[in-house]
Image 1 (spheres, rainbow, N blue to C red):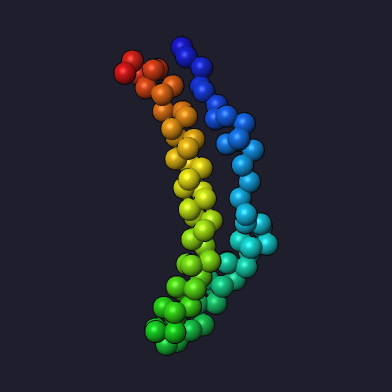
Image 2: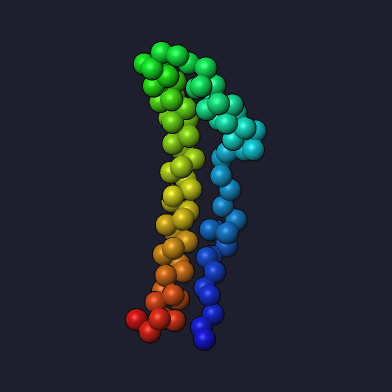
Length: 81
């Protein structure tokens, strides 16, 4: 049975530029969407929230992909590929 290969230290020590305070702010913004009656105004507000969230989403996806590239060879080896 092979050992799980851990990501290198630079991946494990990576920090996101988003704080808990930022996440709470996004949650409040999303909750405020229910108060908007005009659908066009709601779409504009949603787009603003999505734009703010997009950078974090890109960072998280990048870390996930890098981790997968590090772990997948060990998974393949275990499966006999």
